[in-house]
Image 1 (cartoon, rainbow, N blue to C red):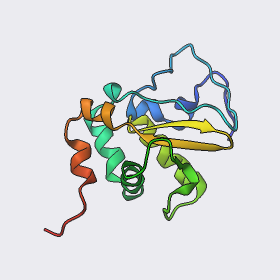
Image 2 (cartoon, rainbow, N blue to C red):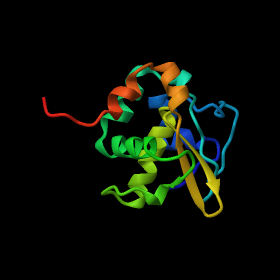
Image 3 (cartoon, rainbow, N blue to C red):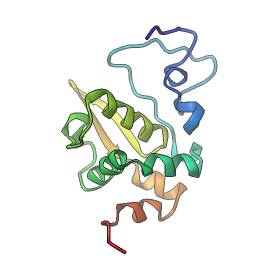
Image 4 (cartoon, rainbow, N blue to C red):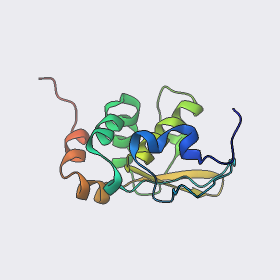
Length: 139
């Protein structure tokens, strides 16, 4: 993939088109690609309901959210999740969760650690996380 430096990474990967613009994204903000570029985070207040529901509808992303909900904040690195996808797909799933305002990430040494933005997300969508975090029950 060839990067055009006039486009933000969000535009390259389509985050802000489908999930709202990240907090740090501005039209005049040019981002150059980097292996360890800081992730862009979308605040839950900027996320439409359909984008939040779409992010939670995928089984892999739902597994990531449920595992993060059961873990202390900043204790889970991206590679520590037991999901049946490769590294590139896992990176994509985390990007969607970040774009939906569900996950915040930061670099901690060579690892990128995660936290579920439960309080912020519950303020925007009261009760939604509580519903999706319930154990599945056969109806």
